[in-house]
Length: 428
Image (cartoon, rainbow, N blue to C red; front, side, top):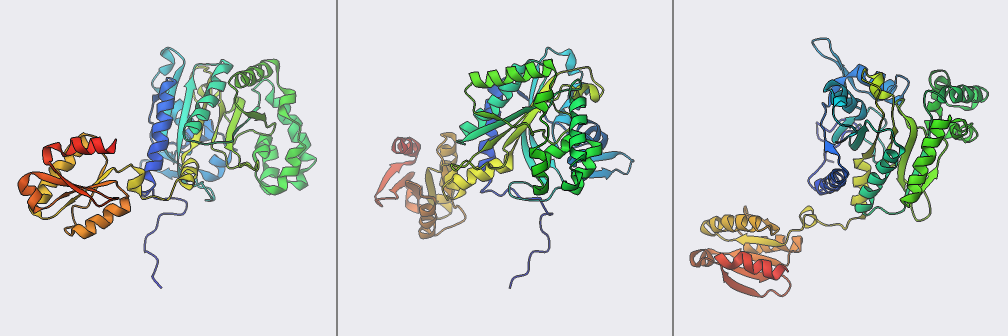
């Protein structure tokens, strides 16, 4: 029995192998293209930030800050954290660079790794990737609806079906304190039926109980008072407008009165997007977000309305992989021809032809390190390419190439300077 390798990726961390790269690239190119169409510009923030940025912005009583954040003390005494989410860092950049002086709203997108020390499970890792959208300086409810539409469009372009939007309003500083008191009183009367974490949350932040996934707490959650029944008039009006926009866009949504999201900075609209099975079973959340009108001020900036959302890339990629045909990574990249060669002189000619094919944007695979034609043709078969270009010693001397039809085995000789044009014609 073979011994396991001495070194392995840390628990919850994972390698993105070559065969997975096309899926990540497909997601990123689709998402960034859609975001660009809606006027979002890319922004990159450091992977490491001051830990206080997250404890203050995300919230001390959240699971992220209490249990999941990777923190470190530098030799110089700085207390830093690997970023567990994007919004706090992008908000810090907005304030630090005086972006409030620019014409508003400002729209940004981010893509990259995040870190949370949570229990690894399907589609969830300790190092993971998100695609993030942020909008600063826009308080109109139309922006909430458009954020939902953008992510819905991204998932639709990636061929996701049976998408459902769950949405709620969690109010603001005017109406939420009364609801929290009401909820706290209700939870205290059923404290013995809650898990240990939720019993602690009653005192710190009772809204967190509504975000609990423990089976024990579900019956208590299901009977809890609903915040939508206790919204102030401005929050109620804002939420009504968001739903009207979604109706106008024909987006499939349903109200979830217990959706609160796991971060303290949210105000008013919160939402998640899921995919359902044909049997109506809800899969894991693909996208989540909402409005956070108080965050910029909380972090030391001017009072600035804002909203945003993020897609979990690993979960989306795993779904894309599960649906794709079992092909080699080269097939997934659309390789159109295979280039085979025999001997040193032919290899030199092949290198030049390879570059000409690249410039002509003709997908091409090769195995220049192999000298056996039989081996190279076997590799070409695995790639299932329609044509193989063969340059032997004779062809190299005559400045020609054999074009072999991989289905029929028929071979035609053409001049090297006509090879690219001929392949273009045949691939059409």
